[in-house]
Structure formats: C-alpha cells, structure tokens
Image (cartoon, rainbow over all chains, first blue to last red; front, side, top):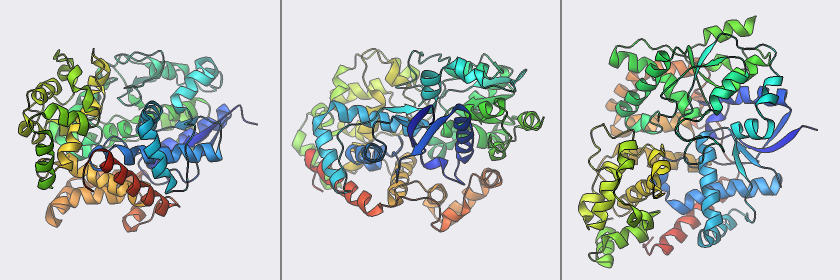
Length: 298
Length: 210
C-alpha cells in the first residue's frame, strides 16, 4: 500500500497535449518515487478559474466545484482532494469556504447538484500538491530521495499569485514566501535572491490585455536574470506558460534577448531523484532547458 | 438588457450603495473601506492606461451614488485576480471579489463597456469550459483571436504563430482539439442541467427576471 493516498484533481491544462501536460508527466514520476498514490476524481470538471466571474456568476461556479467535491466524496470517501494547478486549487478552496459559511448557498448548490444526480454533505479538504510535499512529507523526506543533487544550478523561485494569495501555504508570508526556495535547496540547487517572486504574470489577461501582461512578464524575467538565475521555477501552470511562451514576443517588442527556461518544481525533483529527461517532461519545454537535459543524460 | 438596467435603477432609486450590496458579489463589504489606498498601491495594473479609478475610489463613488460612472467604467475589468489588494487590506475587505462582483453586475444589466476584451474572454472561457465540462484550449484560443472578424483573426494568429509552433513542438497544443477532440466529461447532460438550475436559482435570489 502506498504511504499516502489522495483524490487527484488534475485540471484542464494537464490533459495529454494541453498546455501543462509536462507538469502532469513530472508529477506522476515524482509521486512514484515518493510513494504517493493519486487517484483521479472520476469525471471531474473545470473549476471555472478566476476569469469566468463575469459570464458565470456565483452559483454556477459554486455548482461546478461542488460537483467535483460530491464525486470525490462518493468515489474516494475521506481522501483529501489534491490539485496541481493553482487556479483549480484556489477555485475549489474558495468554493469550499463559501459553501461552508453560507447555508443559503449550500442549499441552492445542492438543488443544482440534484439535477446531475448528486448530493453534497461533507466537503473534503482541498490542498495543493506543494502542501502535500511540505506538510505531509516534509523537506527532510523530500531531500532523502535525492540521488543526483542539482549542484551549482542557480534557480529563481517564482511563486506568483494564486498558490500564495489569498490562502497561501501555512506559515508562509504573502510578501516573501520561502517554500519554493526551500524546495529548490532540498534538491541541491541554489535559490537566487529574486525580488519579483510574488509578482503577477498577468494571469488570464495575457490573452485579453497582452500589452499589459507582457509588461509585467518582462519585469519578472528581467529580475530573474538580475538575480543570477539560469532558470525560473514555478508551482502554477499559468505562471509557467505566461512567463515562458511570451518571451519571444517580449524580445521583439522591447529589444531584449530573453531565453530563460521556465520549469515546474516537480521537474527538478524528478531529475534530482535520478529520473530521465522524459520522466521530467523536459521535452515539453518551449524554451529548452539545455543544462537540465545534459544533467539528465549524465 | 437596458430594461434590466432601468428596472434595477428604479428599484433602488438613489441608493446605489444598497444596489451594489444586494446585487454584486461581496458588495456588502463596500461600506467597510476606510479609504487608505493600500489596494491601489498594490495593484499590478495601476500604471497602465485604462485604469481610471483604483478600488478605493470606486468604493467611495459607490457610496456617493455615482451609478453611471461606476457601472460604465473600464476599471474593474482590469483586475488580474492576483489577490494582492485582498491580502493587504487592513479591513480585510475581499477587494478582488468585489471588483469581479461589480464587473459582473454591470455586464448583467447591460452596462459593461462595448467590446471589453476581458469580458469577452470571460464569456468565451465559461462557454468553452461548460460546453463539455472541461476547457478546450485550442478552440478557446481560436475564438479569442477571431472575435473581431476573419482578417483580424488571421493577423493576430500570424503574430502569434511562433508561440503556437513552440507549443505544438513541445507537445503542449493538441491540434485535434480544433475539431472537437481532446478531453471532455462523460455526464455533460447532467452538468448542463445543473448549471441551468444554478442560474435560475441565482436570478430568483437576486430578484432578476430570467
């Protein structure tokens, strides 16, 4: 039996061929090493993310998240829900909080759920993957599996917004959370002093207001270079995509020469645990992480 | 939609604060603002054009009954949902949610600015996600680029082709999604019935005709 078991909420961007598929690949290999069993919530649906606020309204969004809770409790009773995506985690946690504090919303949500043949009594705990790593396993346990420390690598830990605010990781500050730096160091790399670690990448507005979002992304990448980092690491799929895929456009617009690989924490861990480039999903980088590819080949 | 605007305006007469408190998500918190301005200084979009009124100014305008100026404003549509204002507010006002709430309400009663790009994104995203229960990223991107017609869409797609090609090469853009492939929920029917009910209940609770 696995050491830890959770109900897994992978989220839309994680599916095969989608924008965060490399995140899922690396999480799968990481969990294998750490003996964590993640069982996908059957027929889970989208959380609505933050951006659906205008079209969806409040109750339909709550209903979507409540459907996931009900399915999880029905098929995987008693297990905490674990999300890898910051937006999924936030959307679910926010819904849990509102439903538990407002009986009218809870009653209405159950009336809506009934139409899908479901009922919600208990809402499971909703946690982010990094909470599981830090709180249920701990840095020492994470470090104990390292076979190949990422020695000499300088990495900027980009926490971003939604794994940090409004809930965040327990015991961390909103202004200067240290958990990502500690994760980087637990696999033997060096976390640089990066002053834009909690700056917003523009989120969904990278689509609707690209100039504004790209101005923010430029500041983030510039600060990472200034800190001496050779790559950026993040726990959020949208942070990852925004800071990676628009570097070319920013270079054209601002005359910069950005070419900074952007990874997930889980990819670093897989490599340090002795996994291959494929296990770590390195083939999913738009900006190739050459140094890590060489490292994985050794 | 403008009927809805007149209906609400008549219902609340000159009490715009009450209208926001009852109609906008988390609107009941507006009166808690003490005008310190920490939210405005914390907003990452505050140096960009389009940001006429920072949150604390919007809150005072609501209390002053400036209904037209608030509802027609672009300001709340600039919110990137970063929650910086939310965690820094000394009165614990859930500012991010109120920004979303005011924007949603303005849209609901037909007062949102014409061609507001973030409103369009919100509509497209939700419709895309709820069609099959899960987001189809390719169709989402397509509908965003082609919102202003085919020529404009081609121009935008051309400008973005490096980004798209990079993602295809990295295996992170599934072209099969363009023709309806990719993942979806099994109980799509149940999801649609559930959402229709939720919408109906929300309209009832807020006294809005469906």
